[in-house]
Length: 276
Ligand code: GLP
Image (cartoon, rainbow, N blue to C red; front, side, top):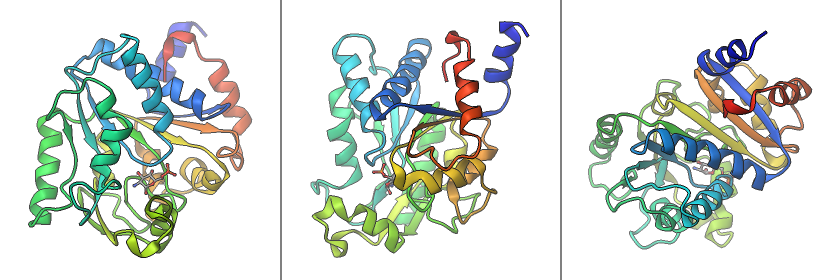
């Protein structure tokens, strides 16, 4: 089969691609390259940003490439996925502050180009509707970075979330609050009980989804995401219906995948020009 045919198979047709890489740093490098290529062809691209530790190496690589003059975000926009309800403007764990600290303050995104759901809004439903409108007015998200919770959540769409959900308030599960207690000095009671999150349908509207998972703690969620049945009980599985998803994993996050060898072989056989 010619390279052109391969290109059609991988790029034009709907595809969930599983990429198993050596470590978090390599994952960050591969995802950052994809984002730099996107910004090269579309300087006003809209990026979807995620908090959590998984995307940090992507942000580190992007910040380094920006510092080296290899990429500019001057015309780009960014939308974050989610936000805790009720954390004050200066709280270090407010997701808006986390994303500024770990990424947006390190690149040249213009002031006002970074948007996040307003976890302090007096009128929560109006704030959620305004967030949906803002994403639509920006032309939709071109590339959405995602992590995954150990219970299979994406954004903060906990198990049982409607697969058709849009930005809304959610109650966090005890499992997610205890996973995230490490950011609150290990104190579960300090972790907010509620959040605002883009819905699963909001995330599904992004044109390209790049999901990153590392470590053995994510292996079960990754197995469900890639090889399990689509179910609201594992919200990330909705991505099986998305036309362009790249799942970047380290060996331990990929350890439960039945078809791991096939995914490795497929990735090795890709023409180098294809990207993700
Ligand atoms: C939080 C965030 C998610 C993130 C998840 C996993 O719950 N709301 O967007 O994917 O944590 O975080 P980590 O990457 O630190 O494991």
